[in-house]
Image (tube, rainbow, N blue to C red):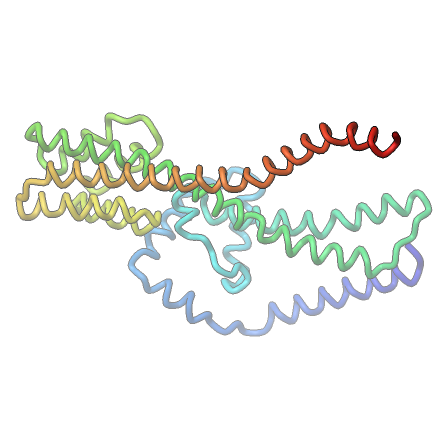
Length: 300
């Protein structure tokens, strides 16, 4: 870098330090959305989850520092349900966002330095603009990863939930009580879905909460309405003594039908997308067959 570029970079860093110091000293205005969220009934549960999350790595420590010191508006819309479904604590999520953003800021500068070793000098505007653009792009990368993983997780959850509803129906038909049927059915499976439901039912037993209320809260936290439907059915069985065997079997059948319809729709979309490549491949094959004959006609 030239002397002018070093002077510009030094001035930018000094200005950034002064701005951050002044921003830290200015009293912050409370965020209305954050205040309302703190008054919500589920806020204490999320805070307990954050406090109970183990801080084992540098990302968690960095995220915990950011959670305590940075204002809420910096993070934008937080995928709370997706994080709850994947069991990713907020400190780790914040730490990943900051880590990716720092990598985006540093990588173009390192690349410019490496290019400068070979005698190529770039204007200072290019690495600065590239650093800001890459940092902004990588800042949202954890959001996309979390939403993509949560989409697959919800699909797996619904598949396992269909089997769980069938097991609950069989236990109820065998004479087990509502809570007992739900707990026994949760203990049969070994997937993470069964373990998650079993943990929530065990927590409700020790806290004295009705199991269907616990599953309703879990469904709201994870964004899985099918689990809330099961909780409503079991509430009728537990509070009003309704016979729910046929209802549960019908519900499990409808869930499997909906999943099968969704898979068929995805298969149809893939088939439609393959029409164009298949047509192009056929056109290329026909061209390979016809080209020698055309060349012979043109040269004869």
